[in-house]
Image (cartoon, rainbow, N blue to C red):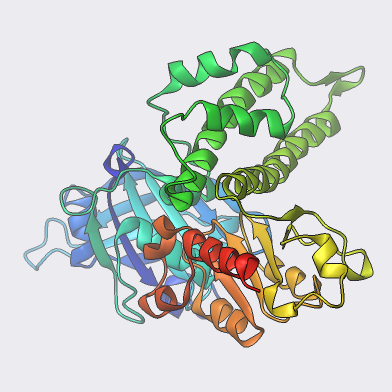
Length: 402
């Protein structure tokens, strides 16, 4: 549950006086009622804090520091006046007016401060914490309990991963038993994907392709992270040393390889599980078929032979790109399969910004999102989204029509 990690959260758009600039260098937030609900009236204390900057295409930046919660009128007859002071660091230096600030109180009493200028990330965090965007208004408060205390499903864990948070896995022993045979080596992604599916015999892609895709991806991610933890722990225990001291380059190279492996395997796993869904549904397709300019759409329906046949009706052709996360990479699919003017792209990224989905519509790109993730999008976007089941029905009709 989310309450296993957080007690409550406040959020707001930053104003000029709350940021570090030539005209403002106060390093503080005024202790309004929402902040007092979060932090209480026990003042005069320093609070360990992790500051996170989340841009769009660049890597996140993290700094550890502290915040100080103080009643500046303590001991005076006037009403209390609280201020929350923050330590200056690389993250706070990047804060600008209009950026979204999330200040979450963790169960261990520390604070997580997340700052982002990106609409998609803002939407994801607002959804995770059950908050509304109040525009230029002050802090809004949400207690993580009772009415808002969601289970940590796929979408929630996706967002927490962006924050560098890995919740404890309740099925850790079962997962460890499944990966025991691999020792300290990664199997191919196909083998891992197959293991994820066979470990969930109750999941049926024939009955509910949307749920199956989410469950299979969730399970593979869990298995991957358990095995990765073992392999990384073993490598760290060996140390990074060189004849002239610490092997800094070796450590950085290893760290980068871990990150790159995560990203590459997520995309391959998504394609593997989509392929299993299409097979269960009896849909004809080619994966990675070659089209114009050596482009390779992730999936082409009904296949490459039909696509290359000028006599085959364009109206019966379909292409689907598959990206576990989008960022700005969704435009890559626009140049693929030029015979097909209206393209489809499946993603597992929650809460993509309205600006991006509006641009997709303008460029004749239909976003396909598993049904379980639709509620992370705004109401207007949900009316436009297509779930996987609907996409499969459309392709099936095109394949059976004359």
